[in-house]
Length: 156
Length: 156
Length: 86
Length: 86
Image (cartoon, rainbow over all chains, first blue to last red; front, side, top):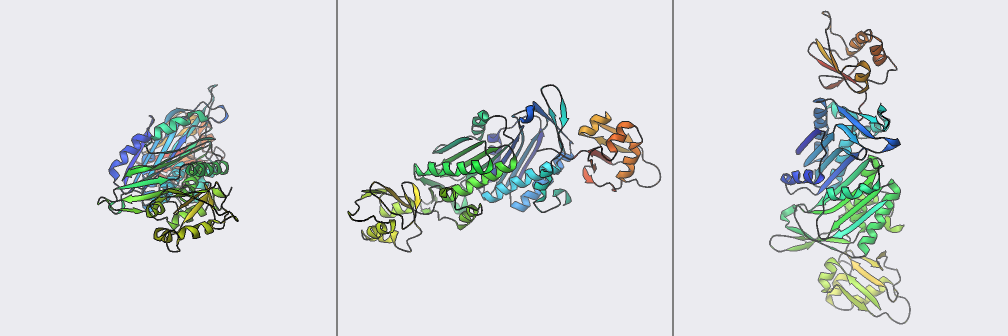
């Protein structure tokens, strides 16, 4: 499996990420992709994303390795941005390539669900008046991860 | 909902398709995407895709409308290529934008599952020796569509 | 008159992508009636529309139709195999 | 010595992102023991590490740890809120 995991301030290009998969070979029949963006809820101006360098990368690598085994992935790319991201900006990209569409799409969901609860990122909301607020974790994210029927990629 | 449905011989750019969504507004929190490619099974050289002009577009429009209602989509783009597509070439793109990731990813799966069984496209395999063979429909595709618990978007 | 369209392997075997059929003056034929009539046109038609010729779907005016759906003058009737897009 | 890291609102309230703690000579403290010790350092620590200060997760050497996990000299101990990435 071709794995590419990046935590970065810069944006990304989907076409460039697809082009990187060219070396994977001709067995790829389906590519699933998820992109999370900063939603303009309640007059939000931007999100500021912080992470735990080192632990972030190793946790994502673990999630990706589990997805690779479980879904027979041929390639998986995860890019997570940090720093100040204005409303509308992409935050995260998950891309999973497999022989068939079911595996590619399920793996994409698996990776983003676990990433939300297991990778040490924290979001702070910034409003136009300068006010800020740390985002509280959502129980629905824990539930989404739990439905995969494991204690989490951290347990392996 | 912003809807864009295209049947075309040309390829497509994911970045260009994302850029088209700029007008949707700031409520988009998640974008799900599926891309199908020509897999190099059994020495295949290319697929030749044929369709039923007119019916294709209206069937896809119906599937997209149902996905829009069911998952609260803010935008949906479907591009399906026709003509001769060599191994490795993209065939189809489904892109669904929603406020949250669950809806975006589920809608993506819904659209591609129904498209496989309801949109009048036919694939012919071409081998390097010049032999050709029409691809037989797969029961697993019917099963994938049926699990959404309806007789299909055609019934509405 | 009914315009009949053929796609994929049906078109290949019949050697045509469309043809026009004149409906009988009496009654409203079903899709099945029309298939029965076509089958008498020769070996290729017999092969395509016989049981065992492969599963066939049909559409009337670009909507999926059943074997007992009625066909009216001016309709566009299409025959094709199960879809394999995506 | 143990290196302690703080993230997100914990760091904001404590006014620091890291500090070094000297472990007692006797015994192996648990994460809970260390939290109890930190709480005696002042109002901000009391607020962060008290029940009701908000849910806190911890990691030892970048692996999730439990309140009763042992902490050894040389460990990197991190305290942070539940994650909100993605």
